[in-house]
Structure formats: C-alpha cells, structure tokens
Amino acid sequence: MPILITGGAGFIGSHLARALLERDEIVIALDNFNDYYDPAIKRRNAAELALYPRFRLVEGDIRKPKVLRKLFARHKIRRVVHLAAMPGVRRSIYEPTLYTEVNLNGTLHVLEAARVHGVEQFVLASTSSVYGKTKRLPFEESDPCDRPLAAYPASKRAAELIAHTYHHLHGMNITVLRFFNVYGPAGRPDMMPMRIMQALVEGTTIPIFGEGKLERDWTYIDDTVQGVIAALERPLGYEIINLGVGAPISLRAFIERLEELSGLRLRTENVPTPPSDPPITYCDNHKARELLGFAPQVRVEEGLARTWEWFCRWREEQARP
Image (cartoon, rainbow, N blue to C red):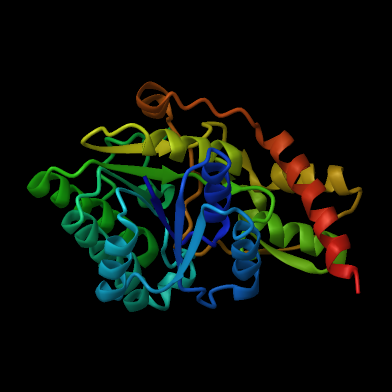
C-alpha cells in the first residue's frame, strides 16, 4: 500500500521516508523544491532516497489540484503524511498571503484529493507554535489555540480546523501531530541547531533573543519519525496529538551543550525577542503516550551529541574536492 509523503525531500520528510523504506514500504515523495532554503539540500536528500527501489519522487506543488489528482490516481494512494508547508514563524510576519496559500489552501487541496481517492489514514503535521503565549503549562491539546502570534501558526491552526471538517463530513481518519522543535542530523540550515554549529566553527556572531532565556522543548528527529509512523498505523477518527519530549531547556543551556561538544565559544549578540516568538514551548505528551505508544528515547544532551557528530562529518565531506 503506497504511502504519500508531501514535503518528502525535506528534513522530517526524508528521515521519515528512509525509515518507512527500511520497513519495505512503498513511498511516494511529493516536493516542489522551493527556495526557502537551498534546494540542493533537498535534492541531495531525494538522491539518497532514490537508492531504495521502492521509492518514487514526484516533483510538484500542493497548490495545484490537478497535480494531486493525477498523483493519487496513478499511485493508488491510501495513506498520507502531509508535511509540505511554508515553514518559518518570523518570515510569515511579512508574507501572510504566501503562508495562507500553502499551509491552508494547499492542505485543503491535499485533503480533497485524499477524500476523492478514499485515503484510509491521513496524518497532518502541525506545530507547537499554535499555542502562542498560552499560560497553561505544559501545553495541552485542549487549549483553544485561538491567539496565534504570526501567520505561520495561524495557517497551521486553520489547517487543523479544515481537517476536522473533512473528518466530520466525510468520515476521514485524520491525526494531527503538533511537532515540538524537531532537530537532528541533516537538519534545516535556518533552524537554530545548524545556525549555532555553523557560527561556532566559523567564528561568526549569532543574534540571541532575550539573552538566551527563551525555553524550547527539543524533539530528536528519530523520536519524531517513530511518532509519525505510529500515527500512520493507528486510525483514530480525528485526534490532535502533541509530539514532543516534555523537557524544555533554555537557549543558553542549549548553546552551552554545543560549546561543550565543540570545545569552542559561541560569539553572540543579544537582540529583542520578536513578537512572533513565545517565551516557552512545553509539551504535555500524555495523549501521545496513551494513543500512539509514543515514548521518546533521546534527551537533548544526547541528541545534540549525535547532531554535532553528524555535522563534523558533513563539514569534512563538504571540504573534499
């Protein structure tokens, strides 16, 4: 039974695709290779996945319904993990139309194609950003999430709501997973772990919000992938489920761990926290443990060690002629 992963050449998508391929699943990856960050990174991910005989890459855009209808019909898609989105909370402040077009309208097109073709299980990637500056800690799925801080979380929350409509009207099984600060090897270059590691080795200065006091609940990529696979295998009607560790740490502690691993000192510049960024992300994962058997294994100290080890190897490979 083929599995469609939208955004399948990206960070989470490529890790998920590899894990599924190693379980002998047939994986169809849809990606438009946009330039939010260097498309060559995603091209390299796709090339590595292409070494698996049960992998297929489709280059296309979720904003084009005809592309989706053709893809679903040709590959007889029955399970979907919808990861494709415009990421980046702060950038969304300045491009709200683009984020609405991709994250809401694009999701609507994928849901409609899934409905028409009788998809049995639909996993929708959402984000801890939907909680905004909620005073309820840790973040619980019952929170109304009705005060988004930027267009990115607003578009993701709206996608959650339209997904419920498809469950209510058409009986679709849809599991919404709210990801918490996913990191790990081959991570996105715009995310904080890669930016810090690059700045460490290059000796450049990196801006730090709020004197490093912001707290984030980091989730290692392998744990995230296992949570997604569990959701893919468990039709639950309609559920929203947090997928995170439940152990936030400050940005300063995060930096200190990477300094310890590298033996280097990070040069920082304190800057005001943008209005789009909450002071903390903090996952209550009881629902994930109960419904998905989710049990994150990698604490951030170990996850950063693995990520730094990968980064050092990657730097050596980049330096080769």
